[in-house]
Image 1 (tube, rainbow, N blue to C red):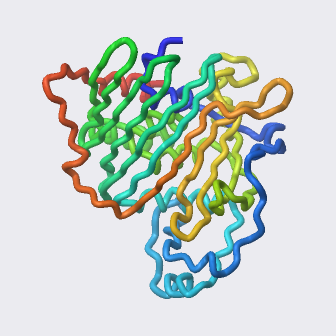
Image 2: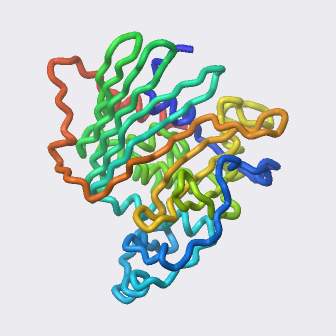
Length: 336
């Protein structure tokens, strides 16, 4: 297998425009590594980070002053609905104007296993967040790296792979305008499940939005993850999305083997980082009905209100030749 695609695109799980429906695996346990935890006591829920509420469309809303006072006074907010929790997680990530986290990722597909580490940062409250995502991945005996920087106008991608180093950019503002027009005319969220495309066009907030659009989640349960209280929820493709993927890949009645069957989200339930993703896993159900992660993305060392400014998200291109991939991006993700 040749690793010419950006690691982000690979992480993404193999760019899918997918789908999902309720399959038998929805009833299959998907979180063996997590141990059950009793509901938290009131002292663990006097959260200064109460999360950002959303309206019925999932848009962030202001928290009334009396609501803040009540929650900060120690009253527990009981959340048991997976859809509500995911909407709150999306809104919370949208609200983070100075946010960073370290990243671990593992990719297992095409009889290969890639592991690596990196760092994610997002800054600003504009419609296009400034982003910086750096990943290093072990490919055999060599290490490949990708740096993606969004300065508010362009997304710059520097790939250091075995075949050499390339620098490319896409015009994010132009693509966002095209995307908005497409979605307004067609009522469809484009490149809904493509990990790389979503990171490029909106970072973690858009990635979670795409997951919400593509997957139907069942019940949610409380657990601990690395000693942190979390919510765990698993989702299967919505049937309409799944049908579109099968049609696109002409794969009969089943999803192509390089695509996942389900997704599992581990979202923080702790006081400090409530609703923030701790792990995102794309899962595949094997022939023996066991479940294996295809792609795992873990966030750790999370911090907010970091000292950031726009200048830190300006890419210094130097003398390197630039490949403009704006049209290629549109051709890949905006055409039927």
